[in-house]
Image 1: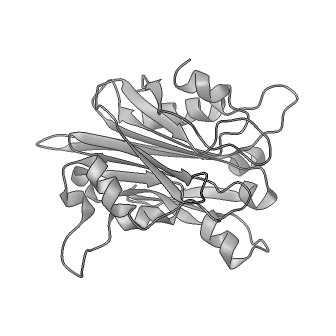
Image 2: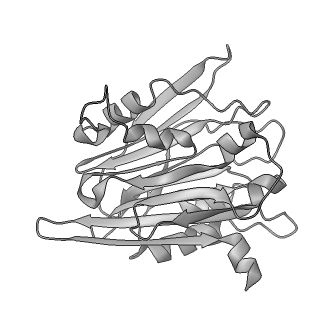
Length: 256
């Protein structure tokens, strides 16, 4: 299986990232949130008006600790102007991709190799401290001409185990990574192996988001763990750029 077929077989994948190229040469980033606990379920993804920042945040006040808030609230997708690049992750590490270095005007987006960008930005990051799952931190980056995914998970000796994967930018193709294998057990097993191949055949971010949301739908008799899906398409051109984005939140679907 590949792509959304594989995703549909995962009962609980956790968080999911897909990056790649559309058939029309758009850089594509898709991000999905699923959750089992009440605090995880009561969240949305909010997109700013400029389509440059997608925030995961609670949609109503909840009694959560500061430690929980640090894991439940974060910018999932950030765009450093539409010509430079897109980053995506399942935590606050997203912001480290665009920080200045030593107070100088240096941005990680200034590099032209996505794997190097991930390595530098994630240098001081580890897996999440949510015992007993120790959720992996997954991240992705697309630059002009280069793309990559990464995962930081807990090794047998409790140290962070970091893996980086180059993603070939081929029209209609992409890669998918998740935090978990998809088996709904306790503790949750971390994603294993190489990212999964995806055929990116949707013409717009809306189409892609809707397809990913449907792929995450539960099988008959199983609970619905969907929280939200977001996506952005960017086509860079020497004279102009074409951008479209879409977000689908489950709690808004339920209200209709």
